[in-house]
Length: 409
Image (cartoon, rainbow, N blue to C red; front, side, top):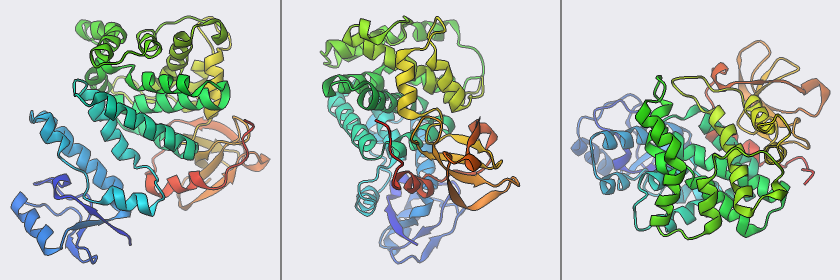
């Protein structure tokens, strides 16, 4: 057991604990499902245990409880200052980063991105956005497969902070395509990634609401949707953004204009790549009004342009992230169901971890397969909604950092 500290502010009162709480020596303070009656009782427990600790294996459950608390603060009309001060951990992130060699906490990055996009009038907006963009860029360079794995999985399962998760996935996909395939200059790649993060700034709250809304958008909502690109550009200008390429790309990221990338201006190249990645990522997301489709089907949709010709930007995205992206599910020739953990030598031969055996039972431990071999080839993509096993990011993300098969670029 490895213990990590959590802050008392992240624990919900009057709600069953989703994880056991322990003291610094691992002695149980409160079992799973125990209900803490008051903040005073929690403080006393914290003092008795010289802090509050959980097993690192329970960190996902802790994060989900923390996110629920944040939404409770929003529903109660608390100020942004109070919400921002509801810290998820004490030294958890510092300890885990030291332990995991700077491995990112994707669940916490969701919270950061959500706060930035929802509080778009803050004086430190540019600084916070720059920091997030730098983090995403660093992690996608250090472990591109792990970065895709986390964001594809969260996009297909997370509805509470959809807009933030969607923006991060689009930014990372675009960055990989620009860097690994299109070989764009670094400054153009940075403009692209920041434009992707802020493309929906003008409708962040509505975008989150629509994921939980079974009915079609109302006339008022449709007006916001139709005008969000121009509104996002205007908000960025008000926030002090003066980069013309960034601003034009955000304004035009929904423009449907088929044709070669080389014939376009720099901001229009950026806008087209975002438009294709945005289309792909949106199809992954679970919504009350429609189920998500498989990542392979979503990727195929962005591969062809409006004239049903191969789209250069879409093709670059597929070459960068694969037909079967890390974080997506596939069925193998063995009739096993696996989750993709690494991109392979080509777009259709990823490395996978089997989670469901051919008998339909969950595996005790994930079994890594190389799908470039005939016996373990991929025969179909499997939508997330059809896979009933629980995916533990903490357990599976290390598999994305194992020695990779060589990439052809």
